[in-house]
Length: 302
Image (cartoon, rainbow, N blue to C red; front, side, top):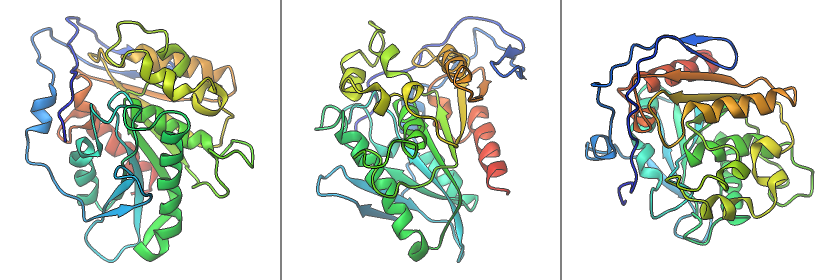
């Protein structure tokens, strides 16, 4: 797997008590001298391996890694989606292995999805068809794998955050819509890790690390089918985790999305942690991941 071509740049600010859209606060004592993680800090570590890899299509990228905890189960399961600006050249599912392994060690199974990026035949509608097919395969195989779908969580990082929120909204698409599928996996909670949820806004961010071509290809001009703030509203709980020194997807993205969804009658739960950046969100020893894992455990009743 290629290492990410971009990295987060730290903000030299000092903040105490970041106020979130929902009114809660996360206290963070920041220092301009505190370093944040760069991609080699995570990706140069020994990489854990999944228990098995499952094929869900004919393309070499149509794969899912299954992480199974020890013991008979049944095991609760988290659907995981990597980021990388929706581009396979930038990232593949292996960047999520570290937190997938951490969940596995805590008795939580992980369904880590690979998909076609916009540079590998993806975009609208292919990437969405991949995510949907991989998710629906979980529903079909859960019983045989002794996985518990009583509360199904989708979690995604960066561009994968967009896809996790999309997967949660997908179940509310009209019947007969190809992206919905005939029997979509029910998602109870979507967790966006520094997600880029709004494709229309992303298309206008010239100078952003992800560029504007990728979100344009992901939108396909079909925002009501592809961009969560414009898609039909589902019953899934929505949670966003961001970090205070993230320049790829700063907390302002979460705030804007939460305000937009509040106008539609949906409360989005927001959390900001620090002093950390974009990488820490998927690093198992970070405070932001500790908070995410605690919320996952709470949702699963553990």
